[in-house]
Image (tube, rainbow, N blue to C red; front, side, top):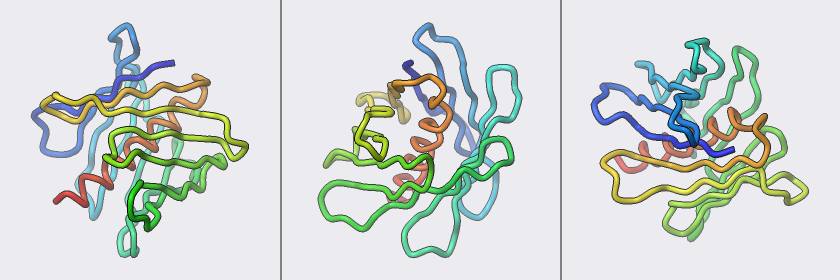
Length: 157
């Protein structure tokens, strides 16, 4: 399953539209005014399905993931020098990025690929392509991408 993640050009808070390969909106993400990032995910019918919330006052950025209101786990950037890596406490997944932080691979504990994430260049807003091996993992993979993008955004400010 392929998802296209595109940030809206004019928005006061983080706001994203997530499309499938046919160009249909699958998810909509709305930022909320809060200490740190707080992103609410809605499905195509407008029903709330998930939240990505930044935990503040941590040494390295950390984000909690919620499906509906149920806590799934968290993702935190690891201290590394050359390639970004994240500690994921959700589904036993691991995330590693490329040197330029444009491409990421999400793997299961056994090494199988859950998703690949690549940033498309030459767009006015952040645009990612998320290829998910199993469609049931699409929401969780999207949450990881949102957390990684929010972490990068906070670091670049």
